[in-house]
Image (cartoon, rainbow, N blue to C red):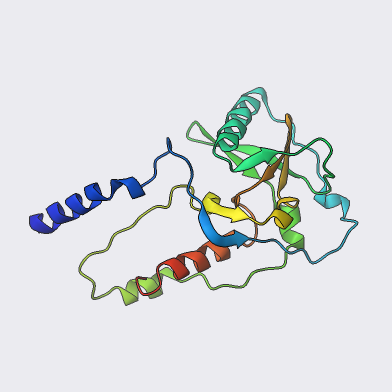
Length: 195
């Protein structure tokens, strides 16, 4: 068993350049863009053009830090002042154990988004399929959703509004209706024969 552990450690060390950290540029999955198709036409209902929520001073400071971080990572860009902004989604700051997280309130957008049907596997089925394996490992794709590029057409639907302006997602955010299905399909395509 120790020999297998040493071999695995050596293998991981030899390929350490393929593992990301928070201090490196965010990866980008090529050839697999995320699209959003709405089941309504213009003019869009007022429900899709919502104002920013008024954050507390503590949440405002945290929100500004989150915006700056994802701007630097290329996840969002500031919407231009001459662009027509028809759809905006407010964001909130969620707190858990003293740590903050920026969350888009995409409920209105999700109401009008045509669902992408793709099965999410049940954990019990996966466990049954792995009953004869010798080793099981897990890996976490760093900001996995946000490594998926959004089509230029869909970006106009993914504009968030905060107290300091309007921003447009260039990468797939958490909270949109089809994100889990899209990500599962991608993982199945990448790991065909491995899962």
